[in-house]
Length: 490
Image (cartoon, rainbow, N blue to C red; front, side):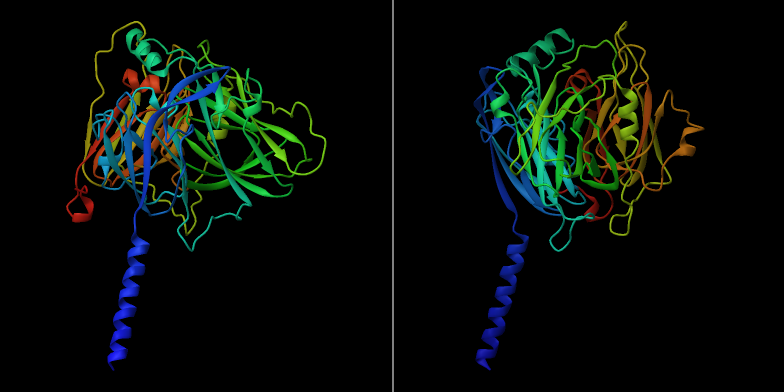
């Protein structure tokens, strides 16, 4: 009998140990520090995390919680934002400087609790102060919960592609000049894929990013636009791809040979290596609907190269990218997104709206603005609809709007001015895409809906860094609910 009870106690302790191990919170160390990097024939110091550019990738499963210890060994203040992570009841670690937290001072440390909940797919993290996120950023890969899988055939392999920019000048000086002048910042000297400008830029060919593939295999490409001030067209020579997700939410699959991706947005695609074995350029170039504005119109490239023995084309085949101001291609691509909307991935579109908001982007080039954007206070569980109106007579462009603390359903979008009587009749309330960042089309509008079920203080802003600095942002304060699980965490 004694042996039996001893066995029971041992089994109980072993079970508890297993539970503890399953619930253990992974811990990561981010050291923000300067490191020397050479691009475009010259070397300079840039701000990095752990000396890496782009920074380290975080790998988690859906529903996990992690702790990231951020050490600031740089010379300026820093904050880190977990872009697209809803952080339920936990605004304290969201990251916007002077909104939900004070910046981490040089020599300081801040431990950020990152709570993953409904997200599944590709997200990213980045600095959220001044111009630091140009080099301080990295990917977040949210895998399905253990025991579950993707809603599409498992790919042979996965690869993250981060689109970005590179400036020869010191980014701190660029930012200070922007504040002094109030004008547009200097355009970047290069666009990049995974931190590399690619073959078409000076002194860059040896380090061009290369993706090796096996003929007949399918690959999951996780594409992130980490640029400061550019939307991109992206394409792969002679290859189509199938879009299967965006902003850590699955979509109904659709096939395309071109994508338009906004700053802050992520898009997941399946690529089947079904062409003649060769070297093919993956290329990105700026999309800008603002006619006449100064833009870096150069093309960044990476190389998709098939494994095997063959004579490769030299140079590799280059895809045909749309013109820089091809608004039709961008608008049509964005309009193809639909939520998966099946039993395992249901949609919960708010149907009865309590709070209607309408934001316009007026041109104030000839006058000083007179009204500031107001903070909006929302009761817990308030259903919200926001219509963004981007009609602008002077140098209008698409605006990538990002909301912290929530994902939202994009229920409608169109050209011209929003008609409150007619346009809602055509809303998609069945399978609208669930996103955290959306490009409001130039001279058009976009309508989004969400339920304010996440108490806290949440930032909303344009993801063009210069626009956010100029004041294209606001804050939502979502009140606590009545029950304990509806209140902010201490």
